[in-house]
Image 1: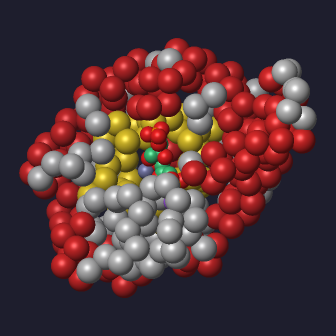
Image 2: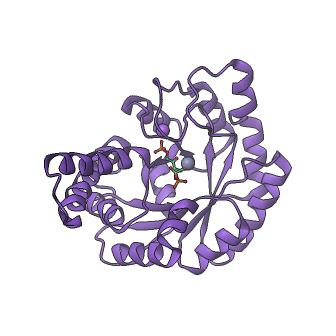
Amino acid sequence: ALVTVSELLTKAQKEGYAVGAFNCNNMEIVQAIVAAAEAENSPVIIQASQGAIKYAGIDFIAALSHQAAKNAKVPVALHLDHGTSLEQVMACIRHGFTSVMIDGSKYPFAENVAITKKVVELAHAIGVSVEAELGKIGGTEDDISVDERDAFFTDPKEAQEFVARTGVDSLAVAIGTAHGRYKGVPKLDFERLAKIRELVHIPLVLHGSSGVPDEDIKKAISLGVAKVNIDTNIREAFVGKMREVLEKNPDEIDPRKILGPAKEAAIEVIRQKIRVFGSSNKA
Ligand code: G3H
Ligand code: 13P
Ligand code: ZN
Ligand code: NA
């Protein structure tokens, strides 16, 4: 069944696990996300970035996800990842997304509050849940200085004010993770996360989670993270398997013989993540 992210995260927060939010951009990945969740008897979030929506087309992303959710034995939410405009948010709501992220993190605090508040008003009026971002989750940063930390990472007091002023359902925090592949091992600021948790009581979201060691993910979940975003690890598994098949069979011309095994590889990595997040058998 199709549900909102907010209802999945409320239960996750209460029971101390996190729900995986996995990025899709084609049919095989949508199918892999739902197949993995079913194999683990876990709730799951299918999410699409603006880039994915542009690539596949919003009608296809929505139709594929709705079809997968309709037949699923587990609860599935369809979420816009890093929406940056009201137009994008509204297009997704019109296409039946059950949750949206408005990422106003590139704006100064007051503007981020303003755009987030507006999205919350519109989305809540029709039962769609909203994620926002405060602080900057950058590219891979290896050696970030103390000054840069204070400039880019989420400030706990600001987070408290942001949540109170916007009424947002969940908050993406910047505590040292980055999108894409890490050059070294990321160092998460758990002290900051704990302070945010003291002041902010809604579910927190960890972006850039591919490449973060399992133990750190578990620690972040114990400190209030209830949604964990994974894209890069799926791409690596999916394309890695495609490459392997093509290297072994350079003459293969049947897409099914390449994308079928790639889908299986994606299912495996997603199942593994779901187990780390603790959401197996929580459907
Ligand atoms: O947050 C970024 C996600 O990994 C999506 O990336 O913009 O390349 O689709 P993308
Ligand atoms: P990764 O690139 O680490 O998989 O992060 C994905 C993400 O945060 C999507 O919003
Ligand atoms: Zn992200
Ligand atoms: Na990452």
